[in-house]
Each structure stands twice: as structure tokens, then as C-alpha cells.
Length: 150
Image (tube, rainbow, N blue to C red; front, side, top):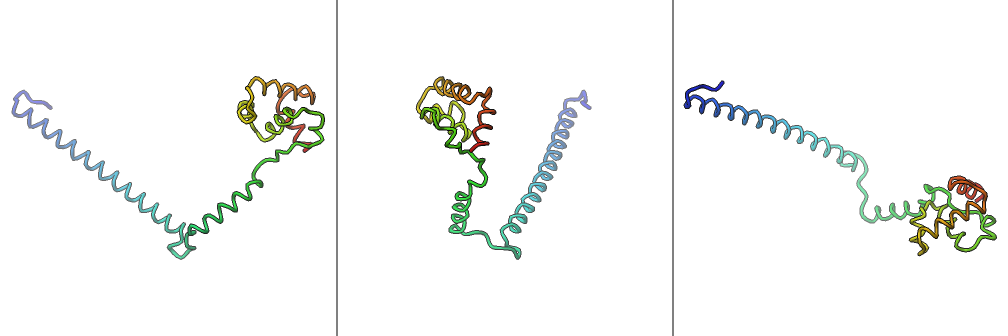
């Protein structure tokens, strides 16, 4: 497409650049049009969701706070049962009881160490002592035993 004549070569390159610019502008316009359509759809859905087309009005700040309080108060319904039967805790030293309760709440050894102000090694030793005490081989067995009786 390039010509030997420098003048014509310059014209051909300029024409190619102009064609590229037109192509790029068309692509940009198409993308802007798609974006505008998405925004229009999003706005339509927002209006539908918040009731500006015959539905309910959106919650005011006071109502949102009430819903938040309600969710907070009902959170126990969505949490797994994590209480350990007090009969299982009888005869265990206090630190082992705290460790077992923490495991039942789903805490890791590292988290328990931070909660109890102990080293991770100490908490690991407490967990091993709990395994020996209850005659189990794994944390899953330990928690299944404790939570089934809880």
C-alpha cells in the first residue's frame, strides 16, 4: 500500500490514521451507547425496587435502624448451636473448659490463644489434653461429642 513517492506515502499513512481514528470513534460511541443502556436499565430497576413506579416507598433512616436491630436480635437463629453441656465440663480445669467452649464457638487455636492471652503452643497442648480426656482422635470428633451432648 505504500508508494515509492514520498508525497503519496505521506497521504496513504494519513488516510490510514484517519480511518483508524474513525473506527476507534465508532467503537467508543458503541461502548458509550451500551453503557447508557445499562445505566438506563439499572435506574429502571432501582426505581422498581424502591417503589417509585407504584410499589412501596423506601425505608427511612429510623426504619432502617429498626430492621438492623431486629437482624441483630435474631442473629442467634442463623448461628450454629455452640454450647457445651455443663456435665461434660465437670472435672475439667478452667483453662480446658475455656478452650473447649472456644472450639465449640468455632474459634481456631490461634484465635483462642489471642482471646485467652496464651501462646499458640499452650492452646495446642490444651486441645491435645481435651482429645485424651474425651478419648477422641480429631477435633471433629471432639466437637461432635461435645455439641451432640450440649
